[in-house]
Length: 231
Image (cartoon, rainbow, N blue to C red; front, top):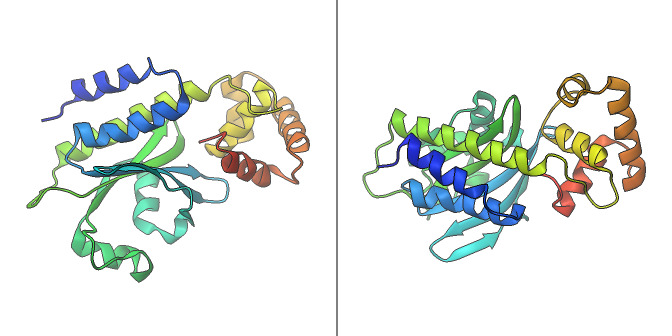
C-alpha cells in the first residue's frame, strides 16, 4: 500500500533526471507504479483561455502522445471542479455520462477514473487522469489524499524545472513571465514573486510578444504551448 513517504521518495528521485521530457514521462508512469491504475494520462492547463491539452498517455502497451486532444475546460465540469479545489476526485462509471455528456462517453469502455490536479502555490499547471481500475475497486479518502499530494509534488518538480530557462530567442526573464502567465499569475503576483516592478513585468511581456511575432499575450502563450516550450 502506498504511503506519503513512498510518494515523496519517488518524486525526490525525479530531481536526478536531466530532461523535462523524461521527468514528465516518469511523473506519469509513477501513477501506474504507486497507485491502482493501469493507464495514466497527462494534460497541461493554460488558465489564459481555459485551454486543456493532452501531452502523453501510458499503459501496458507503452507510451503514446495525445497532443491532438484539446478542449475548453469549461466543457469538462468534473475536471474544472477538481482544478478549482486543487484536490483529486473520483468519477465512477455511473456518474460519467451525467457529468461529461455523450460527446466524451464511449459505451464500450470502463469510464471510471480519477482526476489529479497538478499545482504549486496558487498556480495550476495541469492534471493527470488515472483510469483502468481493478475489479471491485472501492475509492477511499486516504487514496484521494495521497493522489492530491502526488499532484502537488509533481507541480513543484515542474516549477523548479522551468525556473530560469529561456525559450528559443526569448530571454530568461521574458520566458519566465510568459510561463507564469500560462500558470495564471497576475502582473502584480509576478512583480512580487520575481522581485521586479509591475512596469518591468509589462516590458518583458511586450518584448516577448514582439519577438514571437504575435499580437497579444494570449497568442504568445498559445504559440509556446504549440512549440511545447511551456507547461
